Length: 123
Image (cartoon, rainbow, N blue to C red; front, side):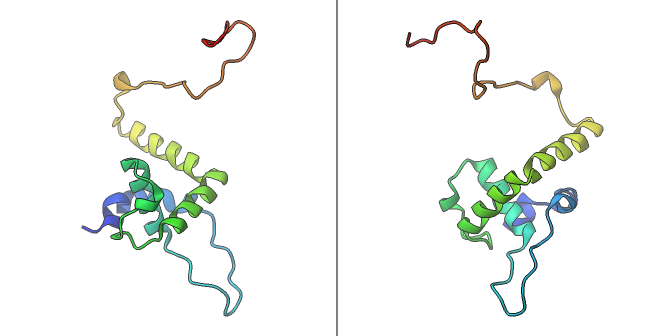
């Protein structure tokens, strides 16, 4: 099994593909052929799952790390990654494949609001 199939299996690709934006129009004779979206998505899933840096994306992916990172940033800005996350949760939820007893919420990235939060630890 190659890395594209491992990190973006057929079922996941069928879920993701309709969420992706259409390719930009290429004018005759201009630019390079666009890198395959499925290969890009597999590379993105590898980086997100492994926690490695974009630069250390293995050469076994048919994608340059800069292209994967650029497409990831594009898709985040367009809401594709959030929609894919929601669609994945919907499919897993309908199949009773989510164990909600093991779910946790990490709110360390949320800033406190209002006056009732008290003084910070450095004050």
